[in-house]
Length: 252
Image (cartoon, rainbow, N blue to C red; front, side, top):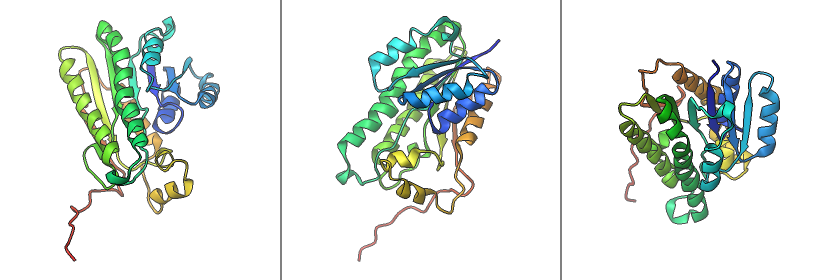
């Protein structure tokens, strides 16, 4: 019997790679994204492989998330895997100089949007006593860096929210995993630098970062583990990335 996966932020990066991976293995897809034209193209590309339901949606819209996720058509209303992938970083300025609109955008998407989607899908998983929730966190939720301020804080929220979900779901056959990628070459930096491709390219210059397909492969592995196995948290970096020395401000 075909299984169903719901992916937010499905139009690029990890979400798109995940859609392609699962479609190729016959899973039904619920694809959620803000950019309708990209959803339409993804549907065109994948519809020959599997059933696809497109939901043009901004996860920051609580009312719309609840309405659409709680009224899925019969062929799609039993979600086996929820991938909370929608998220972003905006800006890299130090806290005293940041744009508060950027902070609001990150909090509303990375924190509120993720909780709205989870709350909408979780009751169905509980009623069926089965399901997997994959939250896309970041190494920034564990390790601070200059300019990471609110972005890192939102990903620390994702980590703790994932842990608390596990606590709330004790005794139920529902798994929760927080994946925390390091540097990955997607549209992440383009979004962070507000469309400045030249600045974004500098982030990846002379590196071999993670690819979207790497994370999609991990999610595929998680979805196919035995149901009694839960991977709580998975931090993954490319081989060329590691931790740096602690910073020291020296007096002149």
